[in-house]
Length: 405
Image (tube, rainbow, N blue to C red; front, side):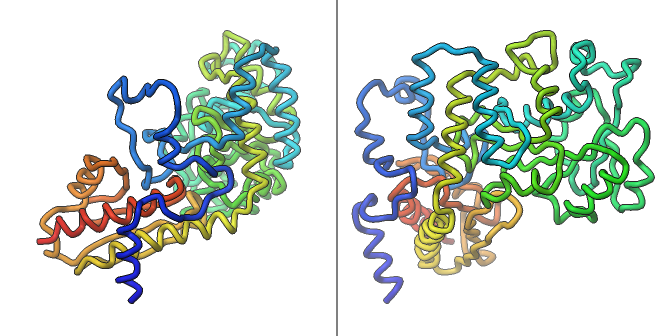
């Protein structure tokens, strides 16, 4: 009965019913189609799609809430001094995140580079101009990182001129610390791949007087992560603004000790002759990021998670109507913490593989983006607008059915 009822529901108008997330009221596919004005994407021939994949940069991450857009529109109509705005917004963001200081950056990658620059140069303008040339400057040259935390985005650190020293055990860590050690860097999303956890990492660093840094780019929710690592004693924390926070995609946050944030800002616009001149954030992004953060910490995240779960359950039920299909819902704990549906199938059950199914979803009307590989489809609901889960459920079922051997 449950499946038959679900099939009847899927046959209804795709935007009927559905829970409304905080900040998304009225932002449905139907209202989007009814927006007045110029359709720039249509003019350019740029494909738009339903995002059932996640907050990927290549897919333009997330959609901003109305509160964020209101702040951006407000900022676009007035002039102000960039540094003064960063000062005032930074104070508000620092208060929310339990940091001594904060600054809006051009993404989490920029926050990593600027935070490391702040550690290396301090407030010495001569050193600021010398980055990324460290030899002969008196600046330290090494950052220690666990092997399980080695990812490509660590290039944001090496862009300052430092080299990464990889270790695995506490004994190796303590042997690696020396006069050239500038910082010890931690990657939260890979915490389970390292042998040293957050508290011990900070404790060892404090023992030797070494600054600690942490990348939590995609690691909210939970909302408490915004202040957890500042409370723990990390010297700075880098966060992406355009993912779950739903701020401007090109914005991020650098949170941490006041003297390091002040030093990092010497490598930021409006100043030139520095490593971060190209990492500009405008007044619209700064105000938008503040508004997005305020809204993010105010919403009921348990209720929001339940909405995501209900949407995933609807898609899951639709997929399960296809014989030979198996589904599993995962709940990541360290990053991208949202219900994630994995759809797989028995060997020989399908004539099309996962990549071909993804292409069929992409080329359908409406276009839908999901993740996965040759043997599976991976779907999230946290970037779906109201009612889009019904569309995804219907199209996934159709594509699976059409792909049967």
